[in-house]
Image (tube, rainbow, N blue to C red; front, side, top):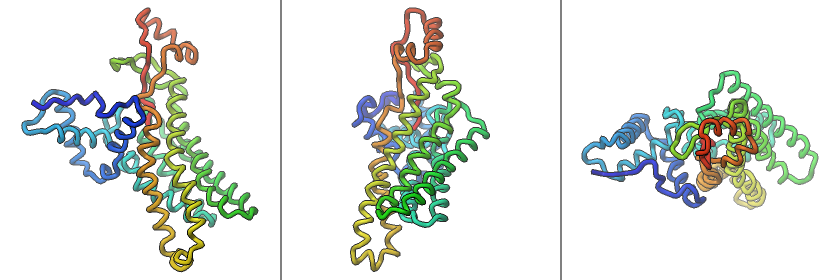
Length: 324
C-alpha cells in the first residue's frame, strides 16, 4: 500500500529555501486554472489518504498532485474552497494586469483613481480569502477595511501625484503607484483582520491542541504579512519604472510605444511576480510561533491562563496560522 505522510512537509519549512520551494509549488499560477470538480476530487483523495482508505492504483505522484491542488485552493483553517481570484496561485495573473496598468497609466487622474480602486478591490478579496479564519469578520468590518484601504491608496496616489507634478524629475512620478500600494497594504490588511487585534489569534501546542488566544501573536503575524505583500510588489513597481524611463527614449519605443508599452509592462510585471510571490510568501513561516516567554512578557494575562491550564508542563512554543 502507498504510504504518504501529509503532515510532514515535502520541503523543510524552517528554512527559507524549503519554504520558497513549497510556495513555488503551491502558488503555481497553473493551479488557478484547475476546475472545481478536479479540486474537489483532490480534496476527496486527501481525505481518503488521511482515513487510510487509499483507492487501488493510486500512486505517490497522484497523492502529491492532489495535495498541491488542495493546499493551493482550500483554506487551511476552514477547509472551504477559496474563490479563485483570492487564491495565492492567482497572484501572478491578477497582479500582473493591475501592477502593469498602474505603472503604465499613472499620469491621468481618472486612470489613477480607476486602477487604484481596482487594485484595492483585488487586494481586499485576497486579504479576506487568506485571513486567519479562526477570527470571524462582520460585513461592516469588511466594508470598513475596503473603504479605508481604497481611500488611503487614492489619497496617497493623488496627493503625491499633485506634489510631484511640480518637480522636474519624471521618474519620481512613476513611483507614486508603489507608494499608494504600500500605504494601502498597511491599512487594508490590519483592518481586514481587525478582529484578531481585538480578540487575539488562536494558538496551538506542538500536537495541534488549542491553547489560548493572543493579541501579541496577531500583531506579529499581521505585521509579517504586510511586509511580505509589500516585498512581493516592490521589484515590479520600483525597477520597472526605472527600466521603462530609460527605454521609452529608444527609437523603437518612440515609434511603437503606444502599442507595446502596456503589454510589455504587464508581461514584465508577471515575470517579476512569478519570482517574487514564492519569495514573499517564504519570508516567514506560515505556521508562525511565539515562545512561552514572549507570551509572558507581551500578553501576561493570557500567560496566566496557560499556566492555570498546564501547570508546570507548559508548552515551550505556541503556534498559529499567520495567514498569507
